[in-house]
Image 1: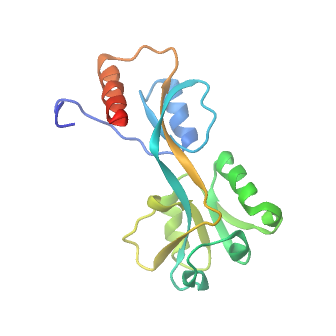
Image 2: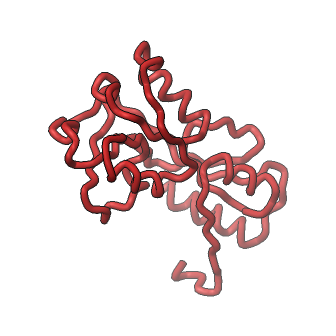
Image 3: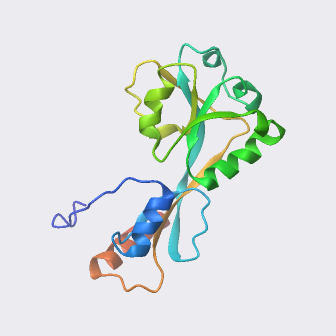
Length: 179
């Protein structure tokens, strides 16, 4: 950004479904989605870092004594999760034969708001570790075991001519990924 101070960015937060729809409609030139989403309608670059899923909960819960959280550990807790079907399908596999015992009490499109709910009581949010406000008092996190991760993918619409600025952005991004 220092090399092009006249460039102005507008950021839009949403889940992968929201971002894909905006890129598809042309209201966003690029999007970054998290997860193993079908992206046939888009050009894409997979970024090197992956997001790891964690259990986010009140530090007063017995789960805080554990180093990692397994499906069995969570059966007695109300669960807060993403409203995205692809995320839920991923966790159907993670839960395995315990899936029918999972008690989901809330779904959300963004993790920040529901982390407030997780910090207030007995429920456990399952989300990426870095999507909640770490300044919130009383919250703690533990990684899921077995480990569950998702890629970060930059997308843009196939067969759509990019602006000179869009092409410059892609060039700079590709250069940074190859170094």
